[in-house]
Image (cartoon, rainbow, N blue to C red; front, side, top):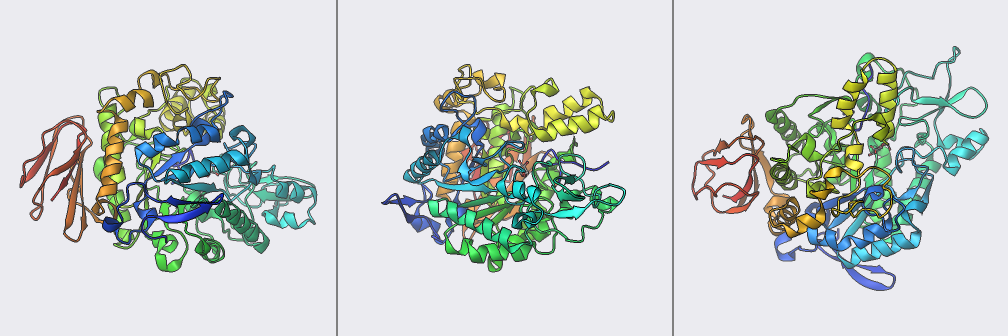
Length: 593
Ligand code: GLC
């Protein structure tokens, strides 16, 4: 069986501030709490804390049940108060929404449901006024099949646009050009137009892959990038970027490759040549932050994308750690030492100069607290704080997915009809309708793993529409919004939200937590994740108990504990000089030593 994807299933103005001229007014964009004296030469994208907004589900300003840009603008003071310095906006472009915006019809137009270009400009100016930068999603491995390029390509095989896509003749027996599977089920080839040719689509058949070997395609992409950078966006999250280059021979995948198609697709011959060119042509002319979604890429290959001397990207998302609980689309049991080993491997590969993005959630994952923490009401708040401590204080630029700062949980799905996501629906079709898995088993799996868990509306208040909408939400609001919401949490000093605020502020004050090196001091400890961050004479120790029982960690010689900097609520601080730290269930603390 081919492993498929429910995402995750596959496996400068250095320093702080730079003036930007927008609409005639000079403004300063940079980390709000940055202290230039302390931060030295840390690039802004390293000291940044990024917040991912999934616009469809963030805030609906006009009551149509779909989030929009004006909704985001209304909540910028919330983000400012949280302390984040960069927003990553998932696709906001015109799209038929087969894959919720990751199928773009027009790269220079705002999706009508989300608003207008004027709304975008207003949102961006309002972000800059608060010292928040914006990065947007660059989805250029593929377009929508509704994009004007693809329509022309299909209508006229002699048009220049035909060569914007990848066409190969079907085999004489009518089967596809090769055995490549789509991540969303079935073959990666479909037929369109007259003649025998099929086009490549690694995702849905409505997402045809662009032909990056055509220099005209690359020029178009660079123009799109300049268009948004000239508006004042500060960079890009690059969707499935390792997939852009293909082996033009399209050999069949081997049995081994079929077990992990992402790894097979992610190693095209020209990827780095194209990223280098993109950097030369576009990125090097602006002060940007770039983060690649590195599906199919092993830790050891990180430097190929991110080593500063190579001039490609600033950082990439690695999925090895966050996929520890998954085997393709099936959940798998995991242990804490295993998770730690995956991080250790990544940091060892990165070395002291390497940089990465740290994250536990995004729009392609279930809710972090429901898969790495414990969303039982007894443990939800504590485990959400523990995960935040681990993820925000690791070495890298932390990314927070909307709602994780509230400890939002998975949704209690109980029927396939409740799912919107194309990958869940296609998987059901192939596996349940195909008679391989029972409906009950698949429902249990999707309840744990589905991307829709992360896509339910943001929980702003206990109101009927969770303060997300006054209308009928496009995806059901989690019934637990009456208890878990921003309004309640803002008032509660012990809430997940207020802990995130304190943690982000702590990271902003302590350069060691940004640039310090990373060292796991207890890799075999089954309950406690304990790592140090060290920069010169500055040392911090992060300890997180992943168990629902008290646990302890012995400190190696050389660590002489000083004061506790933050604690998720629970135990007394370990005394100065203690040799062992005792932690309450799911307690997380940070010490200086
Ligand atoms: C990316 C996106 C995901 C999308 C896919 C195809 O991984 O994060 O949501 O389905 O690419 O664009």
